[in-house]
Picture 1 (cartoon, rainbow, N blue to C red):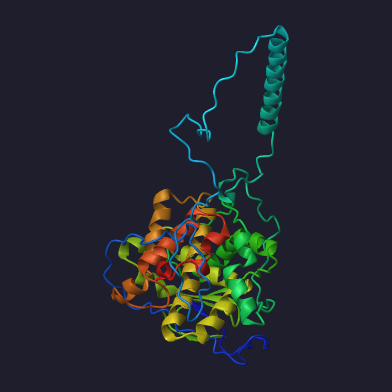
Picture 2 (picture 1 turned 45 degrees about the vertical axis):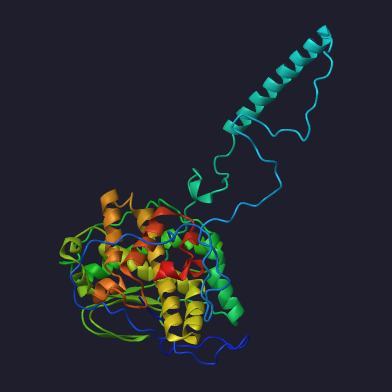
Length: 413
């Protein structure tokens, strides 16, 4: 969940109807009391992490047009082919010519050609086998070369970070949403950063504060490289754990919440938050860490201009359209959190079952699950959508797979 801007600062003016003043607050997610939980529902429709067709613009008054999952095959005028092993028939039958007289010289020439061909093939094969394995093929997500990791020493939590990047026009804001340069980056999965275990039901506020602030060091190691390669900065945000209502740069927070506040660029985590989860998940590995990874996802959005750009369109839109923008923002943070769990899972001792359980954790954070209203039009996404996008993040290293702003609206429902 995000609390965007509070009263600190305003976006720059100028450009196409860029507002002179915005209310950057957003309603908090209604965590509420724990509700009865059923089994997770399967994902629906086109799988979010595939190759969704890009709508003309996912902005107010323009609903995404349904398109095929893959582009239609272009027609290049090739002749039709027969059964396997056959070739196109010529336009007219050609009668066989007269028999040719065989020559010993012809056999010698063919033999030399065969020898040269075999030698060329052998040389090509050796060059292929000795080629640099880091050269990516058509699918950059399938490269076998290790992704370079950021070896820069992890900075301390930044209590005085640089200002967030802000667009000056709606055209620039749209560009940051749909074709942000960070989408072209590859996350370093796996990342050699071990996260120790902690029991969130018994840990003290002080222990939890230390744990979560150490966690942001791993989060920074995973995400600083992609952001810097895309031309952005990533200060390391401080984490505050609180046990009673607290006043922040974004206003007052209640006792059960987890928030990234862009007004002061800090993350806030309520210690009692574990109580909203089903009993079997309360002591499961990496639950609190994945929630914080979601909030760090909002940090990534803020530092790349996605957050303020999305908010600008959200506040310009109708009520129903604004909720679609809000859900795009939230499930993108889910997706980024999923990538992080895959990045540090091996070094942190997470099993396949642990990673699978985290998908159900995000299902249980769905608007419908928390409110017990199946058809609610919420601002964070249904449980099945949140689970699906978190899974996309777990299964991919290309940041662009988390581009929810070109995905069909149905996939962020």
